[in-house]
Length: 144
Image 1 (cartoon, one colour):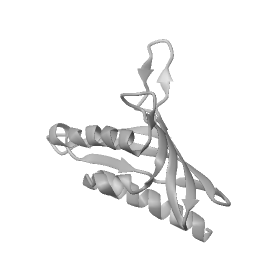
Image 2 (tube, rainbow, N blue to C red):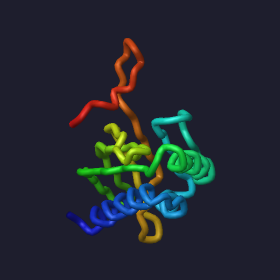
Image 3 (cartoon, rainbow, N blue to C red):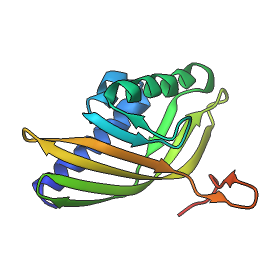
Image 4 (cartoon, rainbow, N blue to C red):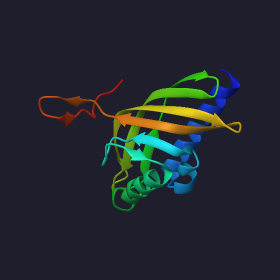
């Protein structure tokens, strides 16, 4: 694994840790100021760090009622080309309910990164869940 690939994996691992610990500032430090995000909930897209920060505030507010956020990314596939890179993965996302049980499902994630001043940041993020077209039901119970 190249040094750039190691830095990107470390950034994504840090992002997961901050998300699970409820550190909004830590999560946002992983994004470029001009980030464009296609999250799986609420809106089609978020443009810029301020818009995405508001969305993350909303997501983290669920911890008060739904329990701690759970996010795991068992495997990451990283490709680097100069000062741009992408990483795709399957992630387990959800929360711990009032009984302490995990309520999670698998999601698909892709991040595109840019290296600026020696630092990798997420410039684009896309999360999705497959769905069954006849019922429009999200298929969160699928497993790899």
